Image (tube, rainbow, N blue to C red; front, top):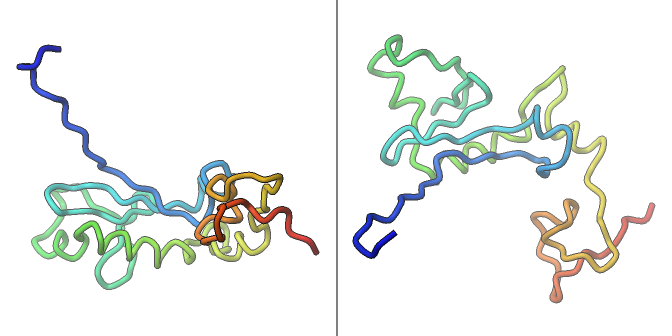
Length: 140
């Protein structure tokens, strides 16, 4: 590339929201996606179902099958989409169990051994004191 060549654009167009870390098996079933649908327009999705402003999941119809009211009721700015997806994530249901019920049955374990808390699934979302080391295995 020369200094006159255009720089590539990079844009995030999809986020995943789940109670489970990347490598946890339940994550593949209990993950909401937030997908970009245009300027300041994001959809909150559970597979083919789209979250509406009324809090209900509805099958997302093809663009040619949407009426004038559908889009404004199912599109959000990014902050709102993230807030709604985080609120909905614990309540996703698969085989009669919510994500929260599955999480409580088998919560992530601390990795311990002096690992960085950022790398520990059980430390996720906590703010351990400096030096940010995983406190170690949970004792029962």
